[in-house]
Image 1 (cartoon, rainbow, N blue to C red):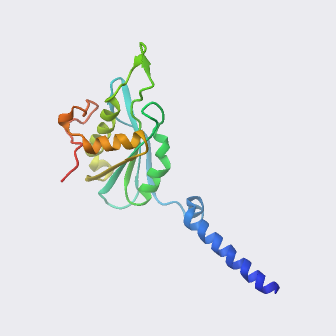
Image 2: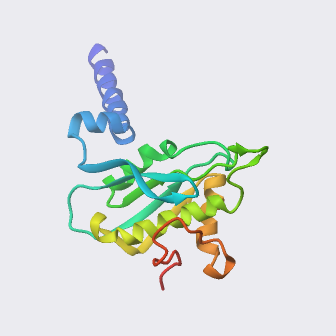
Image 3: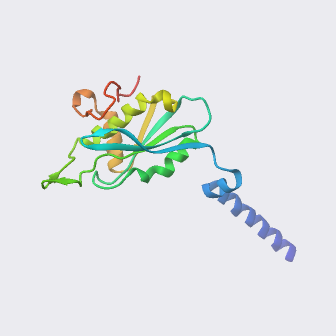
Length: 187
């Protein structure tokens, strides 16, 4: 009876360890080592009014590319939040063969003379600026500029949709930088 229970405990233990290894990145890193990812933080991707717009970028350390790119846009109702919300997901994306960025955009909670300093469409202008920056820096970061995707929750999801659903004729491109590059989806 003792051996049978012992055997059962060993099987349960192995199953639990197996599940933890599959689902826990921390344990995977401990056992198998960190996947090679290059992470760069606080990169200025443009200028929004008087604000330097910043992003964090993660990319595969190896492989010749070009790699598809993902843009992660934080939530917060346009008045809170920051790019750090997606620091972990951009590293995971880079481990899976993507160049990924998480960016800040101007928030509506900053006030000047009793009014919002950065009203709509400043936020749309900023995320469009980030996409133009990615295309302008495609060679440097080994980005396939024809394969870009955008993702976000809540306000970030709205801004991701605005990237895909607006055209230059809508007047939302902004002046933030790299104006010679298109934000439009490539055919």
